[in-house]
Image (cartoon, rainbow, N blue to C red):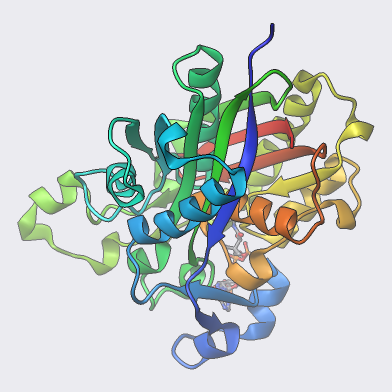
Length: 325
Ligand code: UT7
């Protein structure tokens, strides 16, 4: 009998505080018109009261309820984040404590915006190898905490939130293909050095502003369009499905122009593409699981839908997956 992994539940959480493009105009040299035309983003959420592990908990709780399993059935927790609350312990361990289960493995993964698909690949492998039956996989970020609010080229892009899935052993697929890539030649294109041991250890050089989130957006854009489209095409080819059997694209939500280019490469009309960045901006590792949850709960994506998902982020990292709900 074949052993696959399958997403059986989803959940998401966004903070209630909305920061619109018009709000940003009040304190940074930008305009609603520039942000909408260049990115598609209209507003984003800011977490004022919840930490990353608290947002992760809200999303995880919803995913467990949606999966209709007992929390005791979870035998592993993986959190994808590049904005953990602390260096130690991991967000995943805090989350395990909050859920109130003892024993399941728990660890974080940092592959920036590709983190959720990386975590899905690890979860899929653990399940296929028989090391776990039900893994909670979460993408959770508080990116607004690492932004330089004086840098208009980045502070208009990012937002906070968390998305979660329950990935379970199944006789039917499930996850059909997963491809992960990275290129360390491009580490300097997207970085946040503040908070790491090299930066904290060098206390004489506490130049926080210059070590918050930084991105050479234009260079990232050019690489992202090609890499994300190529990896998405390859993931479909390896999935065993034909291109015309793909029902939806759930891309990482960084820029509508990137999303449109990938949809075009896959010959998918706009009604087959899940877009949430207009309301939530780029939430890095949280963007794909939150988009998946929103699309499922709205009825757009149904049981049996074939989905291709692709992401791109700091590292540089990129990844794609094809799965059937
Ligand atoms: O999620 C992780 C992966 N990240 C991505 O995939 C992000 C990829 N990059 C992008 O999405 C786009 O490159 C950005 C949205 C970040 C920038 O858009 P762009 O079309 O590449 O603009 P640009 O950086 O080439 O800047 C064009 C102009 C510049 O002015 P000059 O030099 O032409 O006078 C910028 O200074 O736009 C200016 N600019 C702004 N103007 C108003 C940059 N940011 C802003 C802003 N408001 N917020």
